[in-house]
Length: 340
Image 1 (cartoon, helix red, strand yellow):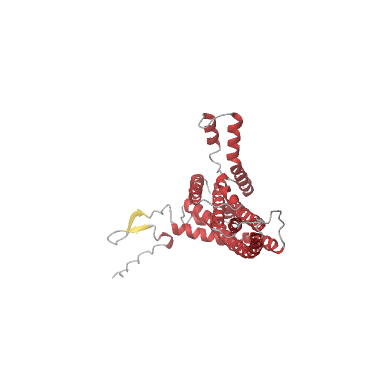
Image 2: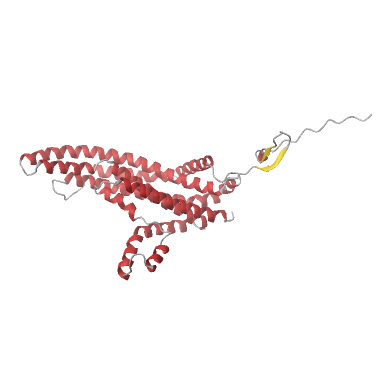
């Protein structure tokens, strides 16, 4: 009598295959419908952005903050020279305090936007992290967006810390200068060298150089500039074979963008062509890929004490979104056709 064999247990689905196919509606077996990875996922982008942020922190890029702190301490230890008259001596001192600090913040944001972004893809290729990520599978658009947002998060965090230091310094110095100004101003009013209107106007001018919403908006504009240059560096890195090439090209485009509007104005005036002509249209098309940074220079005017127009902030945010979106789409188009 032959021994009856027990049926073999069903094979277990490998872990790598879990989720690759969807269960049939009856629960019996597997359907032939493959699980399609969505092209865009906020969770994947967030994870990649967080990992990129931590990776950049480990690269000690935040040492730029040390330079900012040293400059900040030096400007507060030594008294800044000034040549303004008595009616604007306090405002001039605050302006001389703000200008180098905000300039340092802008330098930090631009350098991080270019250098950090230029290092992302080459380093991932070098340590083979890129192959692991794309084999998950992770869509290349999610990878690019995650890397870009990680850099922007680092820039935003750095600017936030620097803004806190800047506001603290300005608030402290403004109170000291305002106290001295009121004492001197009252004496000048009593001696009839100043009218009350002159005193009030000088006080308003002094306060306009302190901690204001216009100053915070100007710092936000610096972040907009850094976002555009970071997206541009990401685009260059998708077809570049060298990190140095990406840094050089991105820096060159940044400087071109700062003078492109002035160059077009000079070309229009020297050639004598009017607006709307074919030559002017050709020049605009030629320089269209280069971002025009002249509207972003309003932050320099705020440093001089002018009020930041609220409507300008919205238009600059829209321009930033358009440039970043354009560069990301071009990066995705090139990166998807790149053999890795």
